[in-house]
Length: 103
Image (cartoon, rainbow, N blue to C red):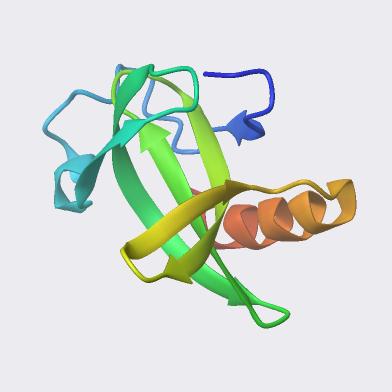
């Protein structure tokens, strides 16, 4: 991950790697190529809309940190954009934890 990727700890409390075949198998999986050409397979935990913008929470397979990105629609499909504002990141983090905080 690049240092610009904002992340929060996964709150599922499952105490194991996320490559398991437990409750996480129902999440769709996507393959990302980051700006530094690092390739990462991620589970799509949720998408949410806040203040007129769309966001996504991704969990890299085998990791415990959730990545939060803004989703922008472009001609070719969807683009993931780093959340630049600390205020906006806190808003998205709070919404994610409200949905997944007990899992």
